[in-house]
Length: 251
Image 1 (cartoon, one colour):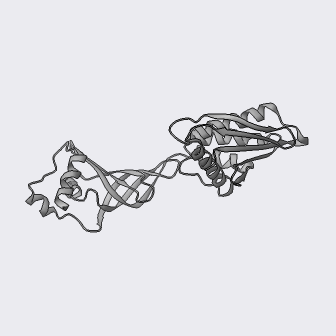
Image 2 (cartoon, rainbow, N blue to C red; image 1 turned 60 degrees about the vertical axis):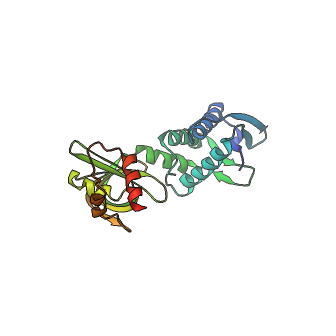
Image 3 (cartoon, rainbow, N blue to C red; image 1 turned 90 degrees about the vertical axis):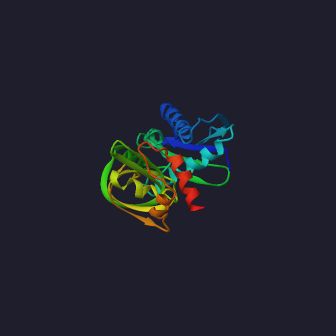
């Protein structure tokens, strides 16, 4: 993958405001750095002074090619579809908004490309899309979700388990009736379906579900197998230890 990002920009009457130029470059690098856990290392490549201006930003570390690809794909989604890429957190969106703001203040051209031929042209729509999701707050909806049961905590009369989306591996915390703890524990590492009031974050990810109903998807571990194995879910049971015991029963 390419680790080179070319920024192309121009202004009205071929005049590019210095402050706008600096804001675009600074915000672009800040957005790139926030796409993965550690910031990248970037160097200035070729710069053309003709109209439009082209500035090459060269990644000089191993993660830079991933960052460039993620950046271009995400900007294209925001620009053309108006939807938020799942890996664009609020920090990335804030920098995308700053990066696109000069387009409503005299800048006429802003585009990004790599040396593999992928080019994304930005417009004022990009700033509007980023602003829309930054203004969006968490919300609630009644939802049915399906995923792998991977964690369970039962202590002090309170009980929670987590399900993981089979495609994105996104984790949703589910609060359920403490009296169901032993039955739910029998299905660790299996797929279940849950239904209830759900809190979504500003990126439309389900983060907390209050369970009204839950059902198993696929073959269960029968609860009688747990009793025959003299296994009982205790308060404060470590979920990793619980999974190991259940896998022993499956075997």
